[in-house]
Image (tube, rainbow over all chains, first blue to last red; front, side, top):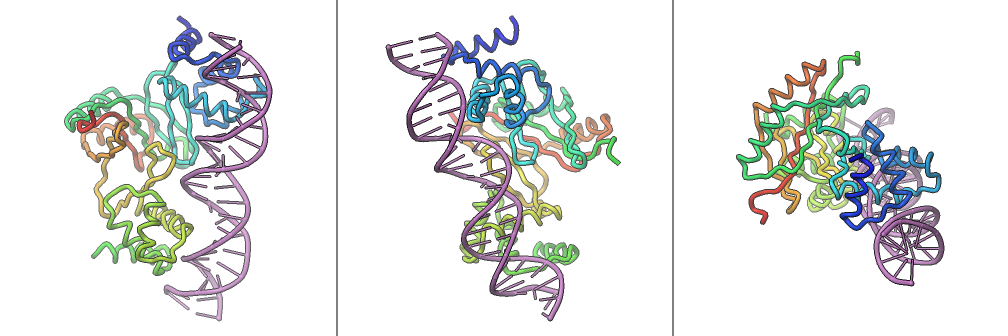
Length: 140
Length: 140
DNA sequence: CTGCATGCAAAATCTTTGCACATCG
DNA sequence: CGATGTGCAAAGATTTTGCATGCAG
């Protein structure tokens, strides 16, 4: 099943209409490998669907989040970033405080210890966010 | 050296004036063991310094952050939370997505693996944020 | 057709800033 | 005193919402 079909099914299951606007937004969103802000997504969607409105982008992002297709993140600049969960493996982030570059990484051992730590405290993890802030090696 | 004296020194070193407003804000901020939003801090400071303004609270929080005395966090509700770094050990957070309760925890092993993961990628960690989202055991 | 979705603009937050006045050092 | 800080209100920035109209199912 293609990603597009998968999204279609997820929408239908939830009784959501598959409008041209949503198709355009999802097409751009799934294609992007970066963490997009709502505005970045809006700007890109506008190129293939010029009459799109901010509200529709925000509302669609909320839907994607609500149905587990997207994840919202804050890297400290006041605006939310969104990432697709459909075509990406889980990963965490290294954020350079000097140049602002965001690098992805994953570490199974850390993930497992997180699970243990949560279990020991009677807590069931549904998701997590790990962000390491510092300085990357390409920055002087 | 008391915390108050420490803050005083840190301010003097940075050439900052120790005004009554800043004293009031810092007094409340250090005393709180919770993650305060700017508004919560403002409301509390207002009780001991009624003429305080939002702007001063925000500006002081920015100073505290800049001089390493406070840390800003986002738990996903759109408003920033601030935590003192002076009287608290580093810790991470378990956030219940059902009741919203925030529980603190620490795990040395995870911290060390974070350091290793970052080093392996040529990255120097200055700080980090780990948030586990899920469901706590007191929630049905 | 009928109800959900959209686009626009206005509203709602949260946060920052300009400016005249106050105050710390 | 002189430079910094404060309070107010206004401006900014991001996100949400009300409402008339459009369109998917």
